[in-house]
Image (cartoon, rainbow, N blue to C red; front, side, top):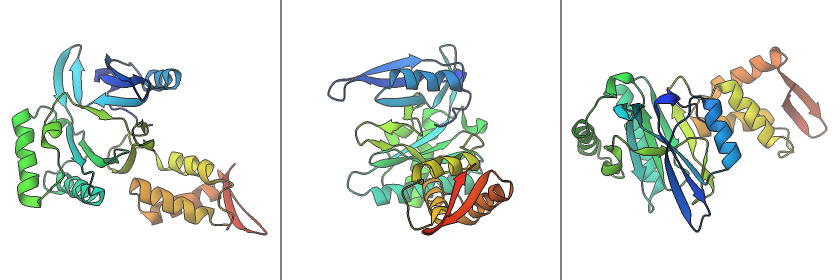
Length: 246
């Protein structure tokens, strides 16, 4: 699950109850990441959200820059628009902490967490949206959602109850993104016993690269380092070559 930056300053919301009659519970607060994850494990909410805003008590003190891209008809276009915004924030605006997530349904989210943008007003955010639409022809941007400084966004690593799919990171420059070793260990557990063609390393590289936007060579090199460090075991049998966690 996503590690929430400055978690004690955030508001959280959850859909609870049944899928036929969900109820939104807002204004939940957590002091630590462990408290949040324990709550989700214990209560098993339908959907999990975190505010783009930061609060000091009840006082709003800033918000991340958030862009919501949606298209029921053309999710490929929504992804292309999200990719564009991700690159524009890094290149045109010079931001350093930018993430792009798949929402788990029909769209994508782009989030920037640099402190320099926290105090941007609704008007400032609208001007950025206009810039993206005007200069880069972004078509699937939900401007109303993207200028809302108290917006709740879906937590990466949780399930979208409407689709049953995971809200997942596509790419990120944010330091709190899941470490590569954790991703390797996670996906070894997922594919172990599934592939019978001896292509564990190939599949690990493919899955992590495609899902998280990490360079394939970087993943391959780290797997080889973990094998040399004896943290992963490379072994063979009559069906091929495999790797597993020690």
